[in-house]
Image (tube, rainbow, N blue to C red; front, side, top):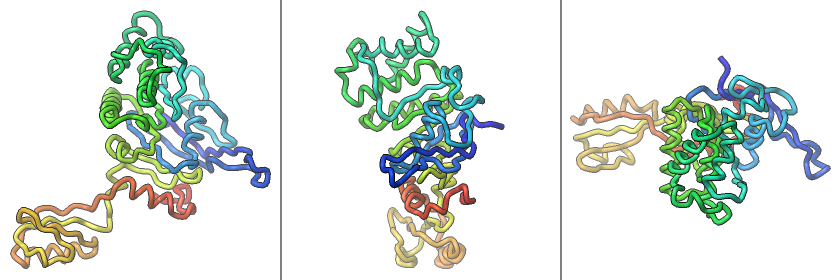
Length: 309
C-alpha cells in the first residue's frame, strides 16, 4: 500500500559552484515511505538533503533519477497541493495584515466566502494572533512571522502538513502551543511530515523518525524502538546496600544502577541473594540527540540503503 509520501530510489544532482567539483549529489538513491496519520520526523545535519527532498515532494524541482508520490499522485501534481499545507524553512510573506494574508493563502487553495473567513479566524486564534490580526506582517517579529506562516499552512485544513523548521523562531510557550496543534491534527487523522533541528520537540511529538546524512537514509524507525538500548538495563531495587553494585545511586530507600544486558540475570540474582526486592527493570533510554550524533558521525557506508536498521 503506497504511503502518503513515498520516495522511490530518488537521486538529485546539482551543478557545483566550483567547476573542479563537477556535479554535487544532494540525494543518493533515496527511498522513504511516510504512513497515513503519523507525525513523521525528518532529521539530518545541514546539507544532508532534507530541503531537497521536501522541494522534490512539493514539485518545486525534478529528480535526476527515481520518482515519488504524494497523496497517491506523482510529485508536482498541482491539484494535490491543495490538500497539502506547507511551511518553508525561511518564511517569506506578502506585506498585508495578518488575517487578511491568511485568507489570501486560503483563497489560493480554492477556499471562498464565509467558510474561508471562518477558517482563517480559527487558525489565527489557534496560533495566538487575534490581537495582532489587523497589523501588517512587515511589523512582526521573526517569531510572529513564524506563527503566521503556520496559520497559512493550516488554513485549508490540509490532509498532509509538510513543515520545515516550524518552531525554530518560537518562544517556549509558542512551541507548546504548536506541539498541541500537531498532536490535535494527528488525532483528526492528518499526516505531518516534520523537518527540524529541534530534536527535543521531535522526540516529544513524532511517531517515527528518519535520519538522512549525505543524501542517504541512515536510520529509520519508531521513537521508542530507536531510543531504547538493547545493551544496557536500569535496575531499581529495594532493601540492598548501595555499595553492592558499581555506580549505584541511593534515594528514599531505593537503589538504582545500570548493568550490561549480558549481566542482567546475575545482577537480579544478587539482589535476591542480598534479601532485596526488584522494583523495576527497564532498557536504558538514550536521547534523540545522542542517536542523531551517533548516526550522522558514523561512516556513510552505514546507510540504510546498504541494509542497516
